[in-house]
Length: 519
Image (cartoon, rainbow, N blue to C red):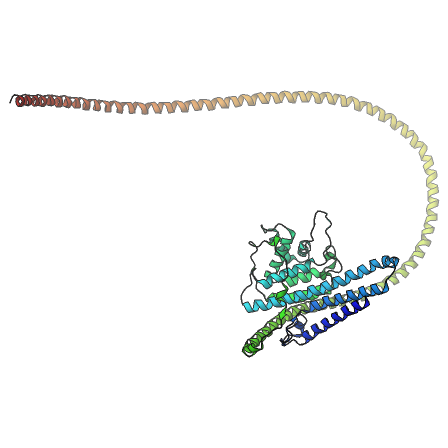
């Protein structure tokens, strides 16, 4: 068992050394900041190996540590009681190590995808659309980043973990994000939380504000603690590093149409072949490809320059904001110092006033005691006078009670008479109201009769006018009838004449026939 574990450790050490040699033999020109993102390809074509990114070396380190822990467990062979005691601690340590490796891998993949996306956009020279493969891979990797470390949902019916609620909370921290969240909610083709989160990321990239929103997102750890675990990428320092790298996406112009895309059921598979570079190069084509290599290297330098300029702009804005805050804090500090001096002066004056008031208090207490003694003597004399006057007041009280009873009786009688008067008054008012109502009804009847009379007069006038018009029309009709009668008589005479002529002609025709027949 020990020999197998030692052989496996030796193989892992050899594999790690080969990876380090390949990364050290890299020839592509990169800046110190971008050398940590990718491992370039070696020139030697004899080995025919593939240079993997740095994230795979971290996974190999985790595999190596896992084998060492397993060999140490086999060698030590603890008792069952010790295993039960140390099981919880080992699981916590293992989970922390796994989360750390996952954070490192996700950060490396996002760096690679951002670099590839910037290079492809600059080489394309036009705005990117939703069919651009590096942009699709970037969104998939960013989705994995936002899913990392999400807590299990509290609701039993929700099976999957979604990152839409944390993104939706950004509008509470940044008012500019309300436009994106409202537009995402109004999209008709998206029904799930996952689709809304993907649409939110695409709109933020189109607005070139993804870095700003992500920075605000990771700075509020108290709000993120509701949805993410402590080992999540956005809850640790890797999130700050990722926010700095996302600033480079501000130089990309993207126009993404989300109406035709099915964001709810999109396939989220990372294509690692886009981020692995093959070291097999044909030596025969090297002289011909030297010019192309120089052009690509110059283009990479230009791309890196643009990226660094954008990063410097972002840092300048941050430094200017920090400078403003420092000036504001200095002014506040000066104001506080002046207030402190004024408060010190006020404290000294208050102390002197306190001593003065204490001395005055002693004098006032002495004078107060003297006045109290004098007042006690006066009160004794007043008590005696009150006792004497109390007997006279009792007699007055009995007389007043008798008067009050007499007045109450008189008042009851007056109230009864008043009630009678009020009842009579109410009856009179009712009678008056009934009379007024009759008068109003009669007036209304007269008004209606007058209106009917006017209507009858108007109807009579209309009938008279119509009758005159009809008489005129009848006279005209009679005249026309007479004319037509005369015309009919004339036509009848003509018809009789024509009939006579027809008979004559028929007779002639018959005579001619007889003549012809005789002949």
